[in-house]
Length: 163
Image (cartoon, helix red, strand yellow):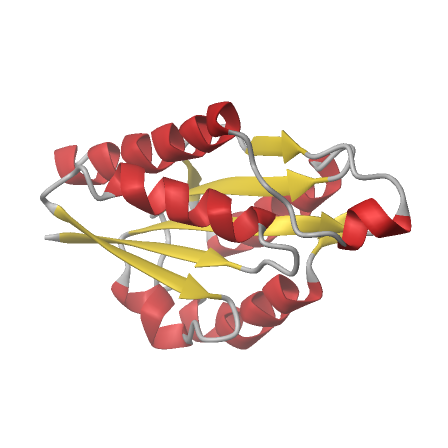
């Protein structure tokens, strides 16, 4: 049995919706245990015990969220040289771009020597004013379907031994 760890942070609910959609997709795979954890709760043992990872974060000020960064800070050295070759993917909830958050996570995963299983899914909310940026997000069904597919594909790869 393989474990897919989905770690997420969400202040305005968009990234949480995306993470839950990915978890639903991954749960279709009966040979994979899906562990969905808020970044604040995820610990080094969660990282070490998983066979694959899905990192889900909003992009804040052209960067991954501070809470997601804290997750990586708390787990990076405990997992270094122990998770080499495992698969990962990334989902980003962005107001306009999302690419820099992807680059940051890719760089960390390069240090961990993880295998990128797929290109990042970036959901753009187009929130550009303080009111819209801070408002609760509602991710549309088409975008949630993309997140669900990403979770399903990563779980299928784990179950088949591709990753």
